[in-house]
Length: 374
Image 1 (cartoon, rainbow, N blue to C red):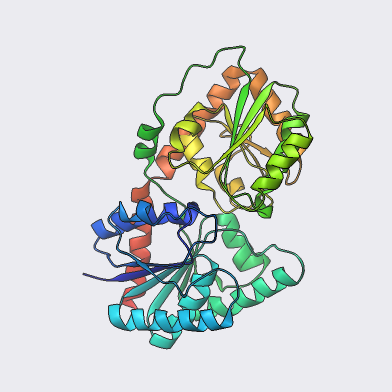
Image 2: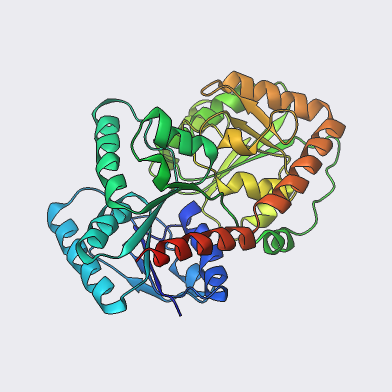
């Protein structure tokens, strides 16, 4: 049986973890098995290792691997990765998230193993020194690796055409996938909404700058429709979010209960999912909302433009235009029939397009092509 060694910077509950929970059993069923090496989560982040173990994954801690620059720890992590590769002798090494991708590709070059890295977010658009450094590093790393997986066509265009960080023949578009039917079953039936009840908005994510969580308060304040907002997740900006909501007199309308393990029922109860991000890959929160019939109203950034067709499967607003998000939400609130039709089209599209089976099929095919070149 061919072997794959997966490496991820940390198993916090986010998109990369949920991709692995779909991939690990799907790839095992297609003949690709092997452990998952995981670095340590940051303080205050819920660790999702048990989620992955529940899907049959052999999760092994790699405590030397951690987010951020630390030359001593990074050197130890690189040595540990080389030892794991020589012990497991995988046919393919698959890395997820930035630090794992950097060290994993270096370790693959040292050991001669084929390596594929999945680019989960749009991080190449950062401005200033950080952005220039990220693009320069990816130009080097992209040539060390054998394949780079992008989650959308827009992400591939950014990598190949706009920023020219990786040659086009090494880039493959494999859209996200997840257990669609399992999520719908966990969500349960959509509840009937009383006509007089305020519009219920949902946001899920990490409270970090790129997600612009404080902009949600501008959206709520700008809406003409009575509305409540539930913001699910943890992160360094959550305290500031709650404080800003109190200063603006929104505490009765805005709730941030922290992270929840069973998000599906919350998604099904919401009247709309809203994002305010400055940058996105293809967030699973949007796909999950679609498959249970919750309309999505999001900015036209990153891979969102590849999965949301404005007026057909959701609503798109110009990047950074929070007033436009508010206007789109007011329009949906005023026309329940249009909102239902939008959600129905999105549900049909997403259920057919983002199944875990398709993700596993395409990933296994890529592994096979790489292994054949070894």
